[in-house]
Each structure stands twice: as structure tokens, then as C-alpha cells.
Length: 319
Image 1 (cartoon, rainbow, N blue to C red):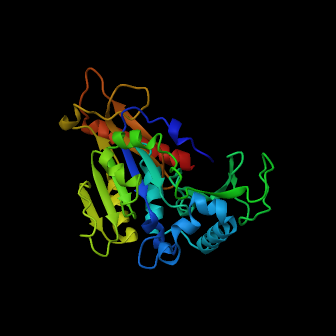
Image 2 (cartoon, rainbow, N blue to C red):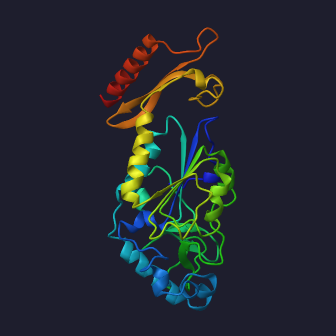
């Protein structure tokens, strides 16, 4: 399903978590990165195989290069980091908006069950017609004889739908505004040195960077508030699982009076208490007590009632 992220409507004043993932996320699944010691750019000149100029002058070589990458990626499977991001998106849905933008062109996030992923640099699962500019699901490997199903163009017309050197990454007309709204920006598995993604952290209020660096001093990520060095599969799951554990329930406190928590779109009343409805391990909704003129704090009785209601509804949905 194609999602129009540009027109994606955030739910009122709900918190927004923005996740940016890069090649390091999929490297642990066996997909090679570009810039490490054994990366693709050590073996190939990017200007010769991944640029607009190369596509125009050496189209067959470009197609062969991307066909090889597609073939090598096919047996790869999502790792623990892909899975925890997908679970985080689904389980946090009743409480906050989660935007996941990836620099990767593989589909491991989708295979992990992610409800929505935006590919900044395009993806291997779709093809782009060089004539009519329409995109379609990829069929097999790229060949000269492939025909566009809309304009019927051929002769290398169907190219990989990936951003080449010399092209502008997708989503740059809406991503900056979402970064400004984010309460936290999590960058995982990316060097943070390639533009325009290198500027993302400058647009955010709070940021966390997770990446495997041979020498952390090489890149002084001064703009990140927190830096975690290590494998994505070892460092990301504990971080997101802790955040998910906190989503189990919400009870208003005195410190919440100024900002409040607004769980329902279009309703300007804050919640005094909110409990997720869990069905077969998945979050399917939530039960909330809303504030009123006579009630600005949650009682122990209300806590018990909302917990019982969420448990009852979860069982009913399962049944």
C-alpha cells in the first residue's frame, strides 16, 4: 500500500517520534554498506554505477549493478533491530505518532511488519519509468526489453526506483517540518555525514544517535544530545523496549497540568488516565478518563476501573 506521507495528518498535540535508519541497520542482516572497510564504494566507483550520468551513458552496467544488489539482498531477513522498530510503531500508535524514514533501499523493515516506512532513497521493490515518471511494483530483474505498463516505453525505460547521485532524495518537501515537530529524533545505523540527512539533527529538539563506529572520535556528533555506540541489534532493542514498557498506562500528575496528554483527535480535553487495550499481544485501542471541570486528577478507583475496562475489552476482541 502506497502512503502519502506528505499529507499524513498528525493527531493533534500528540508526541511525535522521528526515526531515521541507515545502512548499519541492515548490515547485520547481511546487506553490505557503502562506506565501511568492505563497503560497495570500496569495490565500485559510485559515479560510474550510481549516478544520472552513468544511467544515461552506461545503462546496462547500472542495471547489472542493481540486479546484483537485488539478488544478494533476496535471502536476507529482518534482524532484531528491524523487528523492534516495527513493534514500536504498532505498540506506540495509541499514544504517539511514529515516523520512520529509512535511507535503505531494501524491504527488511516491511518484512519485519512495519506498518509504514518512507524510503528516502527509493527502494528495490518498485521500478520507475524514465519516460512517464510513474512507479510500479518491480517485476523480476531490470532488462532493456521491459515495457512500461502505462506509456509502453521500452529500451531501458524501466529503471530502479532508487535515488542516484545527482538526484534529490524523496520527501524533502515535508520531512523538515516533521523533524521540527518531533519530541525526539532517533538516528540508527547511519554515519550522519551524508546530506541532506546530515542536517536532520539540526531541526530537532532532542536526539539520540545509535551507530557502530570503529573510532567514535572520527565524527564529533556534537548536535546529538545522546550517543550510543554499538551494534543496532544490541543497542536499539533495549532502548525502544523501555519506551514501549512505559506506554503500558498513563496517569496524569501535577507536572502534566501545563502540557497535558490529548489522546483523541479533535477533542481538546486532556486525559486523566489512559490504558491500552491489548489483544493477542497487539494494541488495538485504549480506554481513557478525560478531565472535567470538577476533576483534574485521577483517583485510585478510576485507575482500577480503567484497568479492568481495558482488560475486559481486550478479552472481548480476542473472543
